[in-house]
Length: 80
Image (tube, rainbow, N blue to C red; front, side):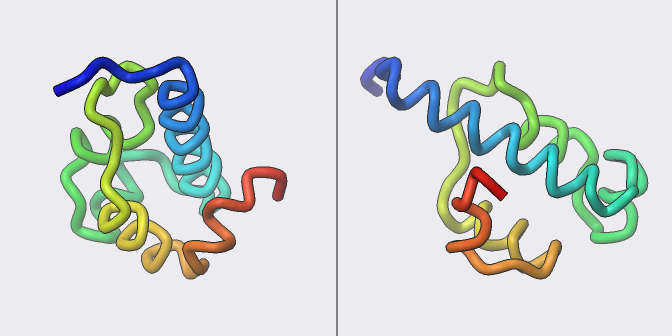
């Protein structure tokens, strides 16, 4: 697998930040969110981590977006 470019890393970090922001906006901790939506807490932690070298698939982002009740378009609206 090829190394991530600087642009890839910036996008990966924005996605991690967005997931963390949206999860935090629910008022739930990682543990509470994971329990409520039946997600392994370690997986949620990995989604929010900038140290995750693999990044997330669009399927994972879509799943998360559905959980928090937003569209994929809204998910990628990083300025909101």
